[in-house]
Length: 592
Ligand code: PEP
Ligand code: MG
Image (cartoon, rainbow, N blue to C red):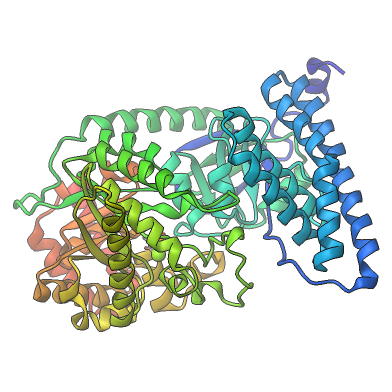
């Protein structure tokens, strides 16, 4: 069948037209076919009995054969679509899935170590990948990732997750119930047109990443999956990440509206860049420092271009996801140094590893938890894996030669956690001094995202140099609202008076101790909510670079006096809605 035949077989445009209203998560518009991508986490490996071993080896071989077959088929399709290079990669994957050395080693592990196929193939692949990674040849080294990829596909088959063909092989809007951050981070950006999810929320990491990448995103779209399954994979989607609207199988008037919105968004981006050098000062002269949140060194350029005066949050965990072992100290030092250089003389704030919660990393092999957001997450992992943090701190000290570096610990609950941070820091520094390495000076601080950390701030603020409020988790933990659950929109509001009071409490404690305070949660990047923060006394806001312009405009349109008195009364408001309408009115007056 030719391409023209395929087109004439498609339903006429608009036949399945539906409009679905979701929650806006990342601005921008997108138009294209959809593809569903989902990758549920693998179950932890289990031990098996001797009488189950032969059957488990056969299951492993069957799963590997299925992956080889799927990879060959995929290579053929990708080749036909004209992507020669990628076709070769998938053909190589098929060869890896049939590699007798890999499969024999996995079978030996099933028999010798009584582990199941999932554990055996992961361990066998790690051995191969580690030996490849140690080679001098660049090409062979890069094959390590392919081996791990294939092993994961085999493990997914063993776990009953079906096809290994879950990649984004053509430009499309990705849809799903949810999208884990590691998967979001690994999607090829040149083919990722937009993200529309039935679940999730604007403060979940999938949306945070979409904003960082400038990819339009809508979350919490009711019935999205059922509607699209019924409409078929040939229908087009339109989505608007600013309004939350998703149009399935658009008609000509939808397309015309979309084209206009697209032009507006492009014009808006040009205006944002043109305003980047304007100071973020209120009309009565209060200056606010605007910083960027980034997840990778490659995001620095945009942040600098859009006028960020430094980095208020470098989410380093994205360097640790989607790989078989943590990045080395050298690799990390290089990543952090490049960000420090890009922003010098401004400071960059590196956040220590924040994994757990919605960001598990498989190579840590932690037992699954019933409530990962309330579990061994972020700094709490330091008791079990101190070297992870000490290595990271050593890399930070090395980067501090190239610019001003601040380091903060996530998920600090109280003074005892600050003891842990200071101890890790002292160990890292001692090791570097012993090695005779050149190191720079670093400021240490904490994230305030657990209410207890704010309520007892006076007990440890004098021992640190700065604090940064992570409102995404602060809202989650104050209001008992899972940040990824789309059914809790009514409860998830950063302008809740309880949250405002905690923030004001933190501002006062920081002033008493004479330390810097900033906000780096998503609240800082929302123009209306940012004004509430300024009214509460915050003078440093860190946000995704794409939000800098809108927040700067909002600040320049208001008087400090107005937002301060609005913030004062808002702390005793009855509802977040009351606070929101007050600050929305102030923002609108400022814009007009
Ligand atoms: C926060 O919790 O507000 C924050 C900035 O950290 P993250 O979103 O990465 O958890
Ligand atoms: Mg957080």
